[in-house]
Image (cartoon, rainbow, N blue to C red; front, side, top):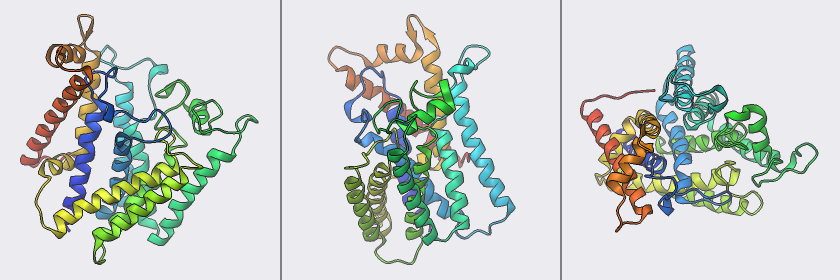
Length: 361
């Protein structure tokens, strides 16, 4: 069991490192191309990062609750953790460095990454501890198919719904109706209301992987690779009629990202558990304090971007003074800044791990 959890920790840690790297370029005007999200339909390697984390949340749920007696205290702990995650996310959306340290009400973003993690964790945990795995398959399938039907068949104010970024896109329309000015963008939020439904399925697919890893199945890595490959094929076929799209978290996107997650996790499992190759300690350190590392990186980056230095911010000043040079392209400079940030948080994660400090949210 220890080795299996090690495999999951390595995957989780690598995912958090990528989340930090993607979120902290030197400048958003010149992002290193591989770290860019797809403009709308389609996906890049960067678009895999957040669904990978929701997937591994599901896998971790199995390790946490599979053999535990479920009682009122279990539901309390799940609820408290959910509220902590949502609270941290709302804090990030509301904080500003100027007194009274809160943005104007209309400028506060309500949805967010941590909020989605909290909601997904809550529903995936409740479903897991109450339903058998066969029933969970039907739940996941219902979420994916139901979301597809909602997004393609429900008209908006009498106008046929579209999957483009437009007012008659059901997910975008609901985000504006529900959150108003509290979205990431004026017309939608990538962690919006309706798209959270299929993101729960991302975590449920991670639960199935966790069940395989804790089962008595032989050749688990081979089985996970087969499942991952199948998800990729089905997801890309579904893309023909329901495009792969991270902002909408389409059902095809769920399957494709879960496919890649299974393939990568299968490889890690094979190397660490089957071949007994020791690697990935750095990822394990970060994975052991995943949420707090992500939160701190987001919070400190936000603060540095708001502290004025001359005609720029502390973030901009550091980037210009240390990383911008005539002999380096701005994209590479931006990447080097991000890598420096990642190195700092990897060092922090190592320190916390060596001191046996594990901050559970």
